[in-house]
Amino acid sequence: VAGILSQGLPRRIFNILNRTSTAKEIWDSLELLMKHSGKTLECWKEDMFDEYERFRANGNESIQAYFIWFHKLVNDMKVTQIDLPKHQLNTKFVNNLPAYWSKYVTHTKDVINMSADNYVDIFTHLRTYEPHALKS
Image (tube, rainbow, N blue to C red; front, side):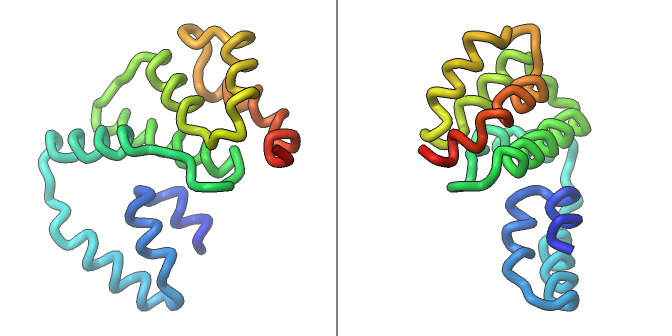
């Protein structure tokens, strides 16, 4: 259930719901969280951009999990009509990985065109280094 919820909910809501142990607790919490969600598009845009600005990797999560959260955030931003340049998305993606990724990020920036490629390409490239990054 947690995997399904993680793909369909904003990270802050998922983190709250992930602390519950029964379906009823999840439902009650979700109902309470969504009760006053009749926001304008402008409010949604502000919330999405704020979430984008605060986006960071969580400790030692896998690069796959990090990528899924980032990809979902970017898709949510597109739905609320927030379009950011590729370079800005790519930079956000690589600069918010944990410090132990730094040498692999540096190498990736040398071989990937940060203005032309996209964060999916960057993820694909970085994923090959995960076993090495996790050892450091």
